[in-house]
Structure formats: C-alpha cells, structure tokens
Length: 597
Image (cartoon, rainbow, N blue to C red; front, side):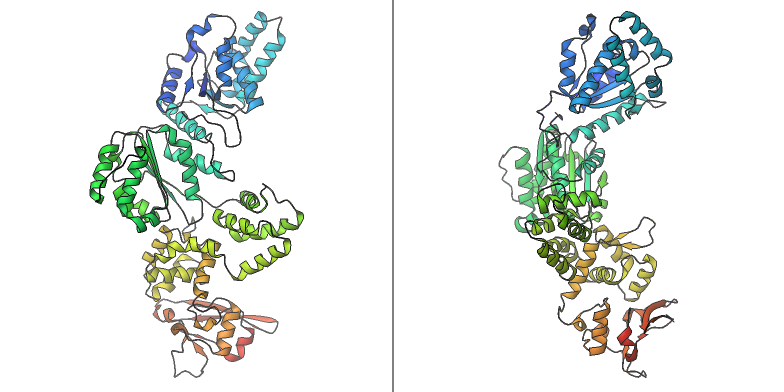
C-alpha cells in the first residue's frame, strides 16, 4: 500500500490512496472501470463507490468518509458529469478537503475541455439550470458546486484528446504512482531538495508496470546517490514481497568477498533465513532459483565492479515480474555495459536548496539565524558548489562557532581543502590508470572550461591517448563535457581535489611538483631556480639563454598550435603568440612582472 503520511506532515496513515469520482452513466463500465483495474493492479488502493449507494437522493455518508480517508482524488470529468447532483456534492467535499487538509486533486478531462467547465457554458449551463430549478430553496448549495467546479477545472490535469485509452490510462497510473511514492515518511529530517529528485527517479522506476526493471543512479561522489536510493527504498518497499538494501558494496566486497554479499541479499529478502554456500557460482544459482517468481526490491549501493552486478543481479529473469533493481555508482561505464533499463543522474543543489541544507547543519534551522553569518554562509555555500556532502560536512564543522572562527575557516579552505570531503571524492581518482590520472590532473590544473578539441590535441602530444582516457573520466563522473560537446566542465571541488593532489607532492616547494598553475608558484620556481621535477628541466643546452623552459608535449604536435601568455611590464600588458614552436622561452628580465605562463 502506497498511502503513508507526507514527509512534511504527521497525519496518520490513510485508508485509501485514491478516491475515484466519476459519472456512472458515462464511464462506469468503460473508462473508469479500466482505470480502476489498472490502479489496483499497480498496488494503488482505490475507492470506487458501489452502485447500490446511489439509490438515494442525497450522497451517502460512506462517500464523505472515503474522501476524507484518501490521500488524493482522481476526478473523471465527462460530458454529463455536471448533471449529477451526487457528483457535484462529491466534488464540493473534495475541494473542501483539498483547501483545508492538503488533499491532492488530479482531474481527468474525458471528452470534455476544462474551459467548458470553468465558463459553465452549453451542457454545464444546462445542468446548472436544472439544479437551480430543483434546489431553488438552497442557492448556497448551487453556488458551492459552481465554485468547486471552477476551482478543480483550473487545476492542471490529464486530457484524453485523441490518444488511445489504454496508453492514456497507463500514463495516468505511472504519474500517480510516482507522486504517491513521495508520501512515505522519510527517515531524515534534512532531505532538502529531494522531492523533485524522487519524482524524476520514480518516473524511471515505473513501479506500476509488471516487467523487471534495472535502474542506475550515477554521479560524482557526494552528490546524494545513496541518500536518494535509501529514501526511495524506504518509500517503495511495501510494494514488494521481499527487499534488500546492500550498502557500500565496494568496501564490503573488498573486505568480505562476493559470497558474503550474496548471502546478505538472500537473508534480507527471506527474513533472516540462513544460507550455507561458499562459492559465487552456487550463490548465483540460488539467487536465480529462489527469486525467479518473487517480486523483490533490491538496491545495490556504490557498485564499482561489473562482477558485483553479475553475481548479485545476473539477468532480468532471475527475478519475478514487477521486481525493481536500483544500482548506485560513480562508474557510468558499468551501467552502459550492463542491461540497465534507464539511468538517473542527480544534479547539484540549486543555490536556495544548498543554503537551506547548509543552514540545517550549521544552525539547526532552515534559514541563517544571524545577520553576521549571512555573507559568511554564502561564501561557504559557493565553495561547496551545490554538493550535498560538502554542505553537510562544512555545516556540521562550523556549527556552534563564532563569526571570527568562521572567517578563519573560510580563509583556510582557500588554501587547504577539507580532508573528509576530499577523501570521498578521491576514491574514483585512485582507481584510474596512470595516463588517466595525468589527464585528470591536467584538466584540473589547466584545462577546466577549455575547448575539448584543443585539449585533446595537447594531451595527444603527451601520448596520453586522450580520446580513451577522457571517455573513462566522463564515465567515472570525474569530468563532464558541456551539452554542445565543446568544452570541459569539472566541478569546482573535483578541480580543487586534483590541484591538492599535485600540491601534496611537495607542499613547501613548488619546484618539486609536476604541475604549476599559480603565478606566485611559477615566479618562485623560475626566479629561485628550484625546479627538480623532470618535466621542468632544461632540454636545450645549446640555446642562447640559460633560462629556457619547455613542455614536452608541445614537441609532438604536428599541426599549427598557438600558445598565448600574458606578460605585464609596468602598467601595460603584452600578449605574445608563438606559432609552430615546440618550446616556451621565458627571459629572466620578464619574470618579475609575469602574469600568466
């Protein structure tokens, strides 16, 4: 049963998910009957009135009670709906519950337009003329019906138009299922911005269908994949005959092995039953045999190896009809190489939600409580770049500290990154091959926001095989290419992580690092002659100047390559362009005013 209290309400469990309001003469034995059947087959508990209840003139008390005990009402407006005083009285009660208690309303316009209902012309006008004649002593009732009809006709609903009814009904059930799932209570009080994410995810999960579906949730570390999957699991689990949530599979698999994960899956689904096997293949056989006729919900969290999928969820036919498998991962290529039915990529939080989440952690409130902290909070939120992990970690760290300590922490973040955040982000980097690591570090240090084709040309000269390497980085959620496939885009915290990795080579001496991107570090290395890293050593002993520096990859570029760097001498700036040149030459006299190299 889907109807549980809203995440923002403490209202007790509703008896029904949906109350169906319709004109029996128009649709009881066709459209509404098919809709009721589709809702019921999807596990949505639906109230439909008994024809026997309509024997009397006045609406039966059972219907009022059913409306009050339902999470939402689905109203099928048909051509003669307004002729029924019974339907209009139902409608007035639905509107009353909607206005007073947040009862949800979903209108369906079945061979009738909403404007006809709002303007109350033609058949609707004829219907109210009859009601006015019948209830001439009760003008308030007539006006209440009119107002209810106008209000509901103004709510965005579903229009049949020229669609096939079967497809129309399927679409309605899918959307109601997605909205109903959000009525389950969340296990966290600080799930900011999750409602829209859940609705998008539920549309892909499509819980109303009888097929077996595998859905991937993919994105960078700290984006909220696990939280989203856990809330969805909590909200959907009562729809299934068995359920299993296996957390942090990457770490558990490394420590305990795949057999342990298989046993956990089976034990959770079969309520603690003990399984004795010691071989992965035997475990796979048991899973496929025991679950092939069972409707189950399985969440595999933090998958980083294709073997996890092969051993735990094998093929679609391992599971009974209606089963849903949800996989969270940073590795897009795993989902692309597996028969996944759909994929959802969470985005970072918008500025408003980001500030709210940060405030919950820093002030235990939805908003910043003191004026002194408003601008400081904006600085921290901007640094976090909408990443939920960073917002939570930084908010918790700053909670209870005074403004002076906040300023100190913000200044420190500009130079030293937060270890807890970066340890999470760094997991994917450590799993890269050496060439891929170099490509990631080059983009983080030099090429974030740069043209993709230009960067590939440069990296190709370094023999990094960038076409393959960049594809790996994209699929591991470490870098993105914009929607026009032109420029690289890396999250600010991933970029800072990459630069931190380079700095860690030698914190105190830039000359011992493999990459330099800050003016003060370049100036220090060139003026103090402290470069010891191979890529910074002099390569051309026979040149006229001893202050010669080269970048190896430039030597390998065959096509024309144009390099630009700015040198500021006094108040003026110069832009120097070097064409078809394999080296960059810097003279000592220019170093004091070097702006960019």
